[in-house]
Length: 140
Image 1 (cartoon, rainbow, N blue to C red):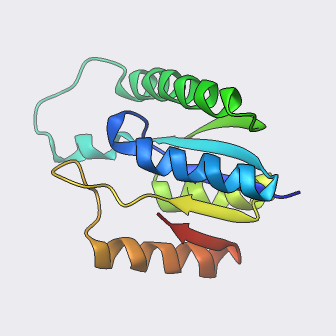
Image 2 (cartoon, rainbow, N blue to C red):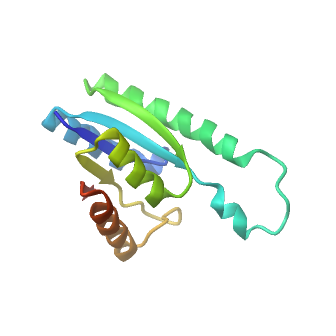
Image 3 (cartoon, rainbow, N blue to C red):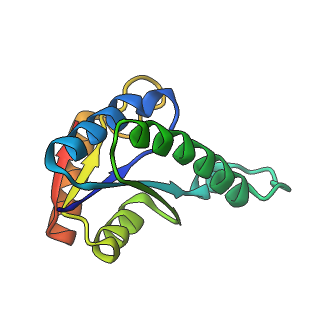
C-alpha cells in the first residue's frame, strides 16, 4: 500500500484532478493525501500595502477546500488525509513528498485563465519534482 500525494488548489478547476487521484487510490489501494500550498508570493507584484492576513486567509480557504475534497474521497471508500503547507509549490511539494513517504505524486492540467502553467511549463515542473524527490509524477 502506497501514498498518493495530490497537489490541489481546490474548487471547480481542481475537480478533474481530484477525481483522477481518487480513482488511482481506489485502483491501487493507496492512501490519498491532498496537499494545498498557501503561497502569498503573488502579493510581491502589488504596490499597495495589504492590511489583511493574506497567508492566514489562504490557509483557511485551503483547509475548507481540502475538507470538501476529503469528504468526496472518503465517500468513495478512499483512505484520505489533508496537508497544508506555506511557501512555494515546488519546494513544499517536494518536501511533503519526502516527509510523507509518497509513492506517487498527482498533478493536474489546469485549464483557462486560472492556469498557473502552460503545458510545457507543467511538464517541466513535473520532471523537476520527479528528479528532486525520486517519486513518480502523474499529470492528469
